[in-house]
Length: 427
Image (cartoon, rainbow, N blue to C red; front, side):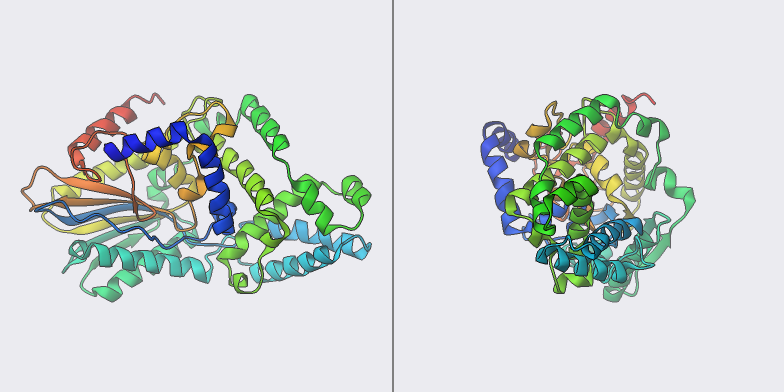
């Protein structure tokens, strides 16, 4: 609790420092500006030792697929064609000509692979699985049961299979079950039509539009790409072109082209920050505790959280050790983080300018291969005081429930708190 209180005090009295902190983080690693395209960073924070007298016996996870190509062909095609036509008319600067060549390379690399896992994406899940095995070997000892589920999307299935291959490479005796079925989509990737319709009401869209106008930075990038300001102002939707190129620039880090060029070079550090702020605000409006849509969007993950609790109860009652691994999407990881209130992501802000200065930072939650892990501990199968800790992207995180053994929590406290929270939601 002490760590949580210190964190809350810090964010309350350090708004300016937080804003500067994010700018510095982007300068240190400009790839973070890619938001949900940020390639998974290997964790650099050591984990706490196991609670005295207890050892890990069960792991429950929900993970996003690894790095992928953009999902739609038009995301590559439209900016390429705009730049190509401008080049044919002699309107591109030298920088613009170089960017056109890079867009052509990305377009060709991704052809007929839209939305598919990249080689880096596969590697990310192998490495995460290996660290999980190294950090908690007791969970995977002997004929441990590993039950893996994926959404029916191919990139998620291949992410799952890479993780399982890595685990079985370490212990061929593992009893592995894997599945990807529409049968499980009610919790693995719930499409809640009623809640989705409430996601972006006019009030939210108006607030977001005003925010984006205040932080618009397409003009400087257009000046670098084109040699004729009248042309790009009159003939091109500069705002949308900047968005499209920025998305492509964000995605380069997840592909093999990351070894050859970096499209972020066309932006200054401040422009990267402003582009990122617009995306950060958008994700908050979609999945955070936003006052403009009733703050109910995190409850899109109510079925998933109930299933996590149900699966944990089943495994706690079992004498066996093992893991339940789930593979899906960032559109699940982010609202689940908000529903849990993990690291304070359940906080509500009525001013989008307050997000980053208060630590609501999207790339901390859902880089490619993002994951939430529950690590359970007990003395033996008869131990009724089961403890667990929760990891966000393999770093110890805190929850809005009391504990006397930080960073660990009593499972009975978690269960009671979140079942009450889930029951409070009226569908």
